[in-house]
Amino acid sequence: MNLLQVGTQRNNTASSWLVKFSVLWLLSQSCCKASTVWTAYMNISFHIGNRMLSELGETGVFGRSSTLKRVAGVIVPPDGKPQNACNPNTSFSRSKNSETWIALIERGGCSFTQKIKVAVEKGASGVIIYNFPGTGNQVFPMSHQTFEDIIVVMIGNVKGMEILHLIRKGVHVTVIVEVGRKHIIWMNHYFVSFVIVTTATLAYFIFYHIRRFWVARIQSRRWLRLETDLKIAFSQLQLRVLKEGDEEVSPDGDSCVVCFELYKPGDTVRILTCKHFFHKNCIDPWILAHGTCPVCKCDILNALGIQVDIEDGTQSLQVLMSNEWPGILSPSEEGTNNELPPARQSDKVTHVEEVEEHTTSQNERQPNSVDAHPSP
Image (cartoon, rainbow, N blue to C red; front, side):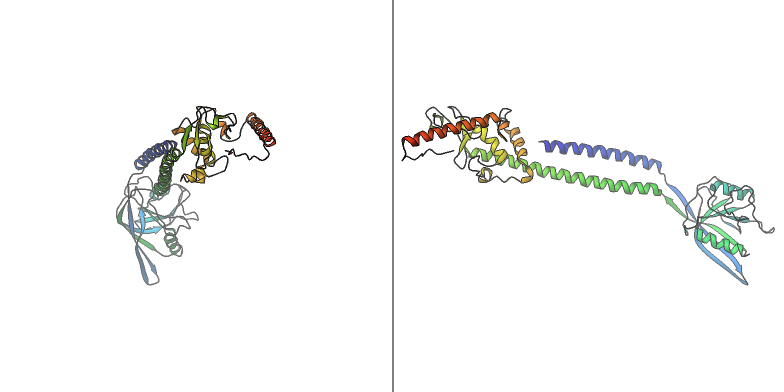
């Protein structure tokens, strides 16, 4: 049936979509390789009056190409207002007796490699870069050029600004940077977003098509059951072949009210539950289209125990039964399902007039007689 064909096409579409998704998954897996990130333990010390304060914490993360080793030195920011050290002529003011010093540079303005290069050329043993304003203490592993024996660490903006304020107040700040813990990152945040969106889309796609397939399966079962019921119901209606001498084929016999043709010997008629009869090839499509007797409007399908949902529609019944019984709806008989052509309507009027004239003449001849001829 058509429903099963549609279900097969939907399954093929789902299979092709899953193949495409698998290809995208493999490509994304090959593009996103695992990377290793090392955190940095930082012991920051400074003097306030006669007291020495220190702060220890895992507050930084090493750059991807940074040297991993322990470094201790004085923290020195760039001179002047710009703190990004993008200018090759940037200077760093440090005490002459300090042999090891670490540059404190603000993120932005140029690449990480450019900042590190300027600080290394000025003699720094390491570079600490603090993040943009408004990012809090957010850090990430930086990508930069490899500098031999130079450590590169990123810290949060809040921590970087605290250190910078102390230095601007004249406080001598030192730091000891040690290698922290190792972390393996398998996916970047772009890939995570891709996986989330793709998984949600795939889940909805699978749910949608499972539901459509299930509905199509239910409808297919219902149509098969309805098809069987219709066959049984039509087999319960009596068929009769008219012969010479039957009252229906006499000159005074009635015509089929569906096609308005007079009954002839050899015609096959179907007798409904209401005892009215019509040409079989006329009444079968009529019942499928209307469900009632053309004369008394008796609900034939309901009388035969057939319950048809309104949503199924009469046209669907006709298509269903025409596929099973091709003889029911032939091209020459399709016009009898709805409106009759004007020629047939005129024939009907002529036939009625003839019947009325015949009845009037009989009444004139036999005033007291009663017409006992049953109407169809």
